[in-house]
Image (tube, rainbow, N blue to C red):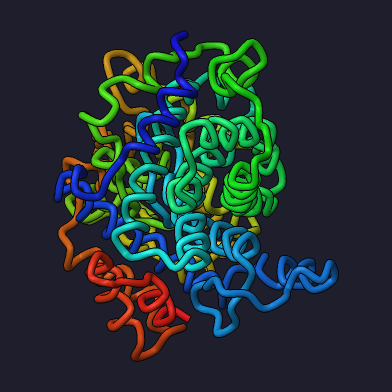
Length: 455
């Protein structure tokens, strides 16, 4: 290990807007827009939102501030805005994913960047720079943690590595020195927390702990801004992130090609509102249904082969076959697969089919197994093998990657349409204006001029 914490701090400190390649900035804007669409829709529809708002009210944390919660006419204090936007944007499970680290970068990073950006009167360029800094830090730390080992230890990387990414974005906007950024990362190491125990009962922890990562990053950076002394060597130290959260640390991946290779360009987006490990199988099921004109009654058996991470998250038949909550459905290969095979499509509104007898019956025909072909010699863990048995024989497909990865990244028009589909029911006519503002964020002298359109 070679001073990874200080190296990342120096990178964040020295990063300049003009040094970031245009394609990286463009991708950051598209990813930001994609995330905000989910946050806006979840403000109205996520079933966990009322509980969070009541908690804030009960603790007198619902006071007015200068930061936007997207889809909400009220403005909030920065830390609470980061909490809510992070939780909301992750609630639909429709937000972006970085395959190598198996985490969702925008969910902790974007809320922290906007909350602090509004707080300090930052420009759109400043906020975009901070978002890229946050993406790079959290994705690289996710790589260093090794997602398979990190998951095996029961951790959720979006909430652990994501805390550092949020601190990087917030710290960049505060103009922290390298020493202060090291302290912010030091505090982040004490706050990095996220358990996979939510999988057992479809709990709301997952979305909350990601919002908490965004908030904790803001708090860590604010402490450092006010001369709080945080731990050094928070990443590589004896009791640091890599020692405590994984059995297969790769510290070199935290800083490899830093400033030359942008992990931001490796972030993919979701065509379906569910765990990314279900997507390649859903792609295959929809394609095979169309190609073979399949109807549910023709299907005798379906076998889905996944990477072991996918089994951990979505493939436990005892708890996942017939989910009854949205979170349970989001993390069920059985439900999402049966839904895709039944109707040839899958969108957010389709969670109204939870408990549908036809879907349950089709899910009973599914088996989900670990497939070594999806682990050996493959860079990304999100592939799937699908075998469908009918009276005509066995039809099989192997998809190395789901759609929406960098090699099949949707064009800007498609991304804007996804945003509008989610945001229009909440923002109405303002949705188009807000989308245009995010896609031209660099033109705003004050980022608040753009964010006010998203309330």
